[in-house]
Length: 162
Image (tube, rainbow, N blue to C red):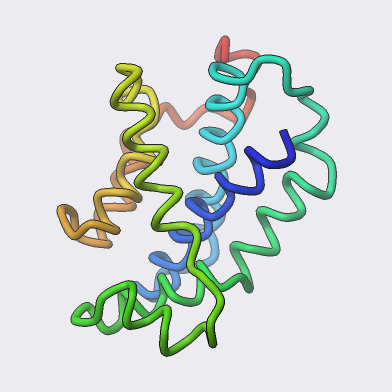
């Protein structure tokens, strides 16, 4: 569970960076993070049911997600990606990260392919949207659509049957 959440959080951090790059408010960023956390939990429950629910609420889960979404390298580079819109992920990574690697874009692509091959893309609109923004097939503003059409009931995965 720790490794799964540690990878998926980078997708959520990209989305948080898109929100920051667009200059949107903290409520929007919180809504995007909530959607990302919900899809992280759903992904784990469907594909890795042996992972304990409590893992998400340990420091390696939600605390790591929040830290990454507010200060991590994936968030920072995604923010710049939106602000500049002319530079590639590789260019930004080389300039901003001093040899560190940007993991979110690769993780988003791998998760997208995995979901596609398992016929589950429609169940993960947030992860799908982040990947499409990363590849340029969608504009960063479209991240808002990942949650605008969602059933906006309180965050309760168990009540949703997930």
